[in-house]
Amino acid sequence: MASLNTVLVPLVALLVASLTVSSASNFNNDFDITWGDGRAKILSNGELLTLNLDKASGSGFQSRNEYLFGKIDMQLKLVPGNSAGTVTAYYLSSKGSAWDEIDFEFLGNLSGDPYILHTNVFSQGKGNREQQFYLWFDPTADFHTYSILWNPQRIVFSVDGTPIREFKNLESMGVPFPKNQPMRIYSSLWNADDWATRGGLVKTDWALAPFTASYRNFNAEACVLSNGVSSCGTTTSPPAPTSNAWFSEELDSTRQERLKWVRENYMVYNYCKDINRFPQGLPPECSMS
Image (tube, rainbow, N blue to C red; front, top):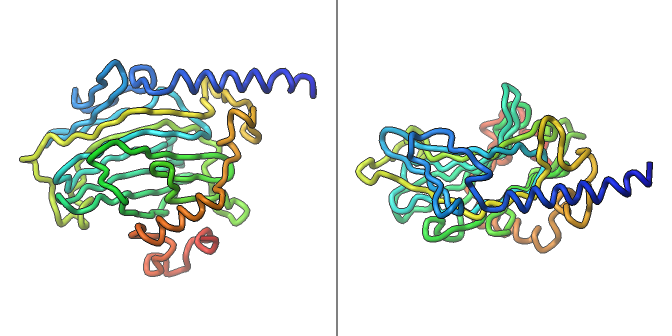
């Protein structure tokens, strides 16, 4: 068996590498526009995608590939100016009533007021793990990179390479962790003025429509599922440590310090601190944070 593994491991690594290269930054190849009746557009020979929202409808897209673990990067430039009432969602999700999901949602605000970056993790259909942040820059002035690292040990949300949240695999404590269901990438721009800005007090100003969010430089180093078979082989060990370091990646001391800095200075809501919401006791993972 050892000799067979010696042959197969480099072969699988080459396969994963080729999938990663082919999926880099061409929206025509990697994504399908799924709704919006022409409000979503792929431009610049597949290098740019825009979503639009007006009073009649928003718009959205999804990846052609399904992933079971990976490191996903996307650059976004959010709706500028008065974006109150709008939500730009960018997330991984499986299907079914017991779905898994890893969320970025950007909640718009009045001109001059900061966006709120809303994050959540669902496992087996259960979420309620919201953490929210302000950003330390204007996310409407230029493109910034929003990343999800998802491996069997942890999920890390990052912005421009700076981690803002880590959700560890604590199945040993009875906390479900997304690890068995392949997920697609989804994104949408939609109206949520019943809750998105100041709890729904501030409504969308349709005189400013259409609202536009822009995407570029998608990249996925990931295990791609095809007909139920992973390009990485098994899901318990990486196919090739050199080309798939993300599979066992963890936060080093420098990134842990950056994570601490973000959470001390920019976190605005943490479910693990909301004792009124959980009168029977905080979720078990909160004891580890």
